[in-house]
Length: 212
Image 1 (tube, rainbow, N blue to C red):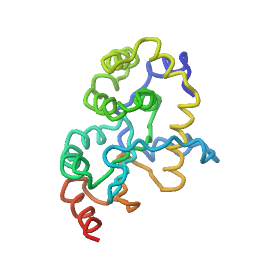
Image 2 (image 1 turned 90 degrees about the vertical axis):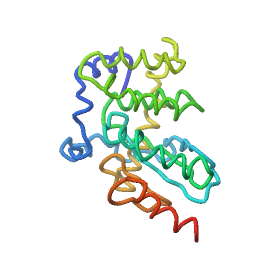
Image 3 (image 1 turned 180 degrees about the horizontal axis):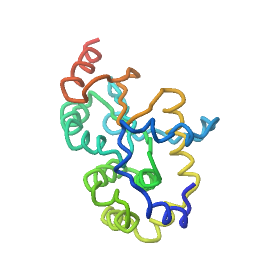
Image 4 (image 1 turned 60 degrees about the vertical axis):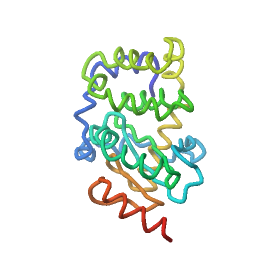
Protein backbone atom coordinates (compact mmCIF):
# COMPACT_ATOMS: atom_id res chain seq x y z
CA UNK A 1 0.00 0.00 0.00
CA UNK A 2 1.36 3.45 -0.89
CA UNK A 3 0.12 6.10 1.49
CA UNK A 4 1.68 9.56 1.78
CA UNK A 5 3.81 8.47 4.73
CA UNK A 6 4.65 5.02 3.33
CA UNK A 7 5.64 6.36 -0.09
CA UNK A 8 8.00 8.90 1.43
CA UNK A 9 9.60 6.29 3.68
CA UNK A 10 9.96 3.64 1.01
CA UNK A 11 11.67 5.92 -1.47
CA UNK A 12 14.47 6.65 0.97
CA UNK A 13 15.69 3.07 0.95
CA UNK A 14 14.71 2.04 -2.58
CA UNK A 15 17.41 0.62 -4.83
CA UNK A 16 15.22 0.74 -7.90
CA UNK A 17 17.77 0.44 -10.69
CA UNK A 18 19.31 -2.61 -9.06
CA UNK A 19 16.12 -4.56 -9.75
CA UNK A 20 17.03 -5.56 -13.30
CA UNK A 21 14.73 -8.01 -15.13
CA UNK A 22 17.30 -10.80 -14.99
CA UNK A 23 17.19 -10.65 -11.20
CA UNK A 24 13.41 -10.52 -10.91
CA UNK A 25 12.98 -14.12 -9.86
CA UNK A 26 15.57 -13.66 -7.09
CA UNK A 27 13.54 -10.85 -5.51
CA UNK A 28 10.77 -13.21 -4.32
CA UNK A 29 8.47 -11.27 -6.62
CA UNK A 30 5.73 -13.88 -6.43
CA UNK A 31 5.22 -13.11 -2.76
CA UNK A 32 4.21 -9.55 -3.66
CA UNK A 33 1.45 -10.64 -6.02
CA UNK A 34 -1.98 -10.40 -4.51
CA UNK A 35 -3.63 -13.80 -4.71
CA UNK A 36 -7.20 -13.74 -5.93
CA UNK A 37 -7.23 -10.12 -7.07
CA UNK A 38 -10.69 -9.36 -8.45
CA UNK A 39 -10.63 -9.21 -12.24
CA UNK A 40 -12.90 -6.19 -12.07
CA UNK A 41 -10.20 -4.16 -10.28
CA UNK A 42 -7.96 -4.06 -13.36
CA UNK A 43 -7.58 -0.67 -14.94
CA UNK A 44 -8.54 -0.28 -18.61
CA UNK A 45 -5.77 -0.42 -21.17
CA UNK A 46 -4.21 2.85 -22.26
CA UNK A 47 -4.01 2.59 -26.05
CA UNK A 48 -1.46 4.50 -28.09
CA UNK A 49 -2.42 4.76 -31.74
CA UNK A 50 -5.48 3.62 -33.66
CA UNK A 51 -7.64 1.48 -31.33
CA UNK A 52 -9.00 -0.28 -34.42
CA UNK A 53 -5.57 -1.13 -35.80
CA UNK A 54 -5.25 -4.67 -37.14
CA UNK A 55 -2.42 -5.59 -34.75
CA UNK A 56 -2.10 -5.01 -31.01
CA UNK A 57 1.25 -4.88 -29.23
CA UNK A 58 1.13 -5.16 -25.44
CA UNK A 59 4.23 -4.44 -23.35
CA UNK A 60 4.42 -5.26 -19.65
CA UNK A 61 6.83 -2.72 -18.22
CA UNK A 62 8.21 -1.30 -14.99
CA UNK A 63 9.16 2.35 -14.76
CA UNK A 64 12.35 1.48 -12.84
CA UNK A 65 13.45 -1.14 -15.37
CA UNK A 66 16.55 0.04 -17.30
CA UNK A 67 15.75 -2.37 -20.13
CA UNK A 68 12.31 -0.77 -20.50
CA UNK A 69 13.89 2.69 -20.65
CA UNK A 70 16.31 1.37 -23.27
CA UNK A 71 13.44 -0.07 -25.30
CA UNK A 72 11.64 3.29 -25.29
CA UNK A 73 14.81 5.13 -26.26
CA UNK A 74 15.49 2.71 -29.11
CA UNK A 75 13.30 0.34 -31.06
CA UNK A 76 10.04 1.74 -29.64
CA UNK A 77 10.65 4.97 -31.55
CA UNK A 78 10.98 3.01 -34.80
CA UNK A 79 7.94 0.91 -33.95
CA UNK A 80 5.94 4.08 -33.32
CA UNK A 81 7.04 5.74 -36.55
CA UNK A 82 6.60 2.70 -38.77
CA UNK A 83 3.54 1.00 -37.32
CA UNK A 84 1.78 2.98 -34.58
CA UNK A 85 1.67 6.39 -36.24
CA UNK A 86 0.59 4.81 -39.53
CA UNK A 87 -2.44 3.11 -37.96
CA UNK A 88 -1.20 -0.46 -38.40
CA UNK A 89 -0.55 -1.17 -34.70
CA UNK A 90 -2.08 -0.07 -31.44
CA UNK A 91 0.32 -0.17 -28.53
CA UNK A 92 -0.53 -0.82 -24.89
CA UNK A 93 1.70 -0.47 -21.85
CA UNK A 94 0.54 -2.62 -18.95
CA UNK A 95 1.90 -1.79 -15.55
CA UNK A 96 4.19 -4.35 -13.91
CA UNK A 97 5.93 -2.28 -11.21
CA UNK A 98 8.97 -3.78 -9.51
CA UNK A 99 8.78 -1.51 -6.48
CA UNK A 100 7.04 1.50 -4.90
CA UNK A 101 8.89 3.97 -7.12
CA UNK A 102 7.65 2.31 -10.30
CA UNK A 103 4.12 2.03 -8.89
CA UNK A 104 4.13 5.70 -7.92
CA UNK A 105 5.26 6.90 -11.33
CA UNK A 106 2.66 4.71 -13.04
CA UNK A 107 0.05 6.29 -10.76
CA UNK A 108 1.15 9.74 -11.92
CA UNK A 109 0.88 8.64 -15.54
CA UNK A 110 -2.63 7.29 -14.96
CA UNK A 111 -3.64 10.51 -13.23
CA UNK A 112 -2.50 12.39 -16.35
CA UNK A 113 -5.30 10.89 -18.46
CA UNK A 114 -4.69 11.53 -22.15
CA UNK A 115 -1.10 12.56 -21.35
CA UNK A 116 -0.36 9.05 -20.04
CA UNK A 117 2.25 8.19 -22.68
CA UNK A 118 3.81 11.65 -22.54
CA UNK A 119 4.38 11.19 -18.81
CA UNK A 120 5.67 7.64 -19.27
CA UNK A 121 8.18 8.85 -21.86
CA UNK A 122 9.38 11.74 -19.69
CA UNK A 123 10.01 9.46 -16.73
CA UNK A 124 11.77 6.83 -18.85
CA UNK A 125 13.99 9.55 -20.31
CA UNK A 126 14.87 10.82 -16.83
CA UNK A 127 15.01 7.43 -15.11
CA UNK A 128 18.60 7.85 -13.86
CA UNK A 129 17.60 11.15 -12.29
CA UNK A 130 14.76 9.86 -10.09
CA UNK A 131 15.22 6.09 -9.69
CA UNK A 132 17.83 6.58 -6.99
CA UNK A 133 18.65 5.42 -3.48
CA UNK A 134 17.91 8.72 -1.71
CA UNK A 135 15.84 11.74 -2.61
CA UNK A 136 13.69 9.92 -5.15
CA UNK A 137 10.42 11.52 -4.09
CA UNK A 138 11.87 15.00 -4.45
CA UNK A 139 13.10 14.25 -7.97
CA UNK A 140 9.81 12.62 -8.97
CA UNK A 141 7.93 15.66 -7.72
CA UNK A 142 10.17 18.00 -9.77
CA UNK A 143 9.57 16.02 -12.95
CA UNK A 144 5.85 15.72 -12.23
CA UNK A 145 5.61 19.51 -11.98
CA UNK A 146 7.09 19.74 -15.48
CA UNK A 147 4.24 17.56 -16.76
CA UNK A 148 1.57 19.75 -15.17
CA UNK A 149 1.14 18.47 -11.60
CA UNK A 150 0.72 20.81 -8.67
CA UNK A 151 1.79 19.77 -5.18
CA UNK A 152 -1.87 19.17 -4.36
CA UNK A 153 -2.61 17.00 -7.41
CA UNK A 154 0.68 15.14 -6.90
CA UNK A 155 -0.23 14.22 -3.32
CA UNK A 156 -3.80 13.36 -4.25
CA UNK A 157 -2.65 11.02 -7.00
CA UNK A 158 -0.06 9.17 -4.92
CA UNK A 159 -2.48 8.58 -2.06
CA UNK A 160 -5.27 7.19 -4.26
CA UNK A 161 -5.60 3.66 -2.94
CA UNK A 162 -8.14 2.63 -5.57
CA UNK A 163 -5.73 3.63 -8.32
CA UNK A 164 -2.88 1.68 -6.71
CA UNK A 165 -5.14 -1.37 -6.35
CA UNK A 166 -5.98 -1.12 -10.05
CA UNK A 167 -2.33 -1.01 -11.05
CA UNK A 168 -1.57 -3.99 -8.82
CA UNK A 169 -4.46 -5.86 -10.44
CA UNK A 170 -2.92 -5.26 -13.88
CA UNK A 171 0.38 -6.61 -12.57
CA UNK A 172 -1.28 -9.59 -10.89
CA UNK A 173 -3.13 -10.54 -14.07
CA UNK A 174 0.09 -10.48 -16.06
CA UNK A 175 1.87 -12.59 -13.47
CA UNK A 176 -0.87 -15.10 -12.76
CA UNK A 177 -2.60 -15.45 -16.13
CA UNK A 178 0.11 -14.70 -18.68
CA UNK A 179 3.25 -15.84 -16.89
CA UNK A 180 4.98 -12.46 -16.99
CA UNK A 181 8.17 -12.65 -14.95
CA UNK A 182 10.41 -9.95 -16.43
CA UNK A 183 10.14 -6.61 -18.14
CA UNK A 184 9.68 -5.67 -20.82
CA UNK A 185 7.60 -8.69 -21.79
CA UNK A 186 5.91 -8.07 -25.12
CA UNK A 187 2.91 -9.77 -26.72
CA UNK A 188 1.88 -9.27 -30.34
CA UNK A 189 -1.75 -10.22 -30.83
CA UNK A 190 -1.43 -12.41 -27.75
CA UNK A 191 1.77 -14.16 -28.86
CA UNK A 192 4.84 -13.57 -26.72
CA UNK A 193 7.71 -11.96 -28.61
CA UNK A 194 10.78 -14.10 -28.04
CA UNK A 195 14.38 -13.11 -28.61
CA UNK A 196 15.70 -9.59 -29.16
CA UNK A 197 13.31 -6.64 -29.10
CA UNK A 198 14.71 -4.97 -32.19
CA UNK A 199 12.84 -3.79 -35.27
CA UNK A 200 13.71 -6.88 -37.26
CA UNK A 201 11.94 -9.00 -34.64
CA UNK A 202 8.95 -6.68 -34.62
CA UNK A 203 8.69 -6.67 -38.41
CA UNK A 204 8.99 -10.45 -38.57
CA UNK A 205 6.14 -10.79 -36.08
CA UNK A 206 3.89 -7.99 -37.34
CA UNK A 207 4.10 -8.19 -41.14
CA UNK A 208 2.54 -11.69 -41.47
CA UNK A 209 -0.40 -10.53 -39.38
CA UNK A 210 -0.93 -7.50 -41.61
CA UNK A 211 -0.87 -9.71 -44.70
CA UNK A 212 -3.33 -12.26 -43.35
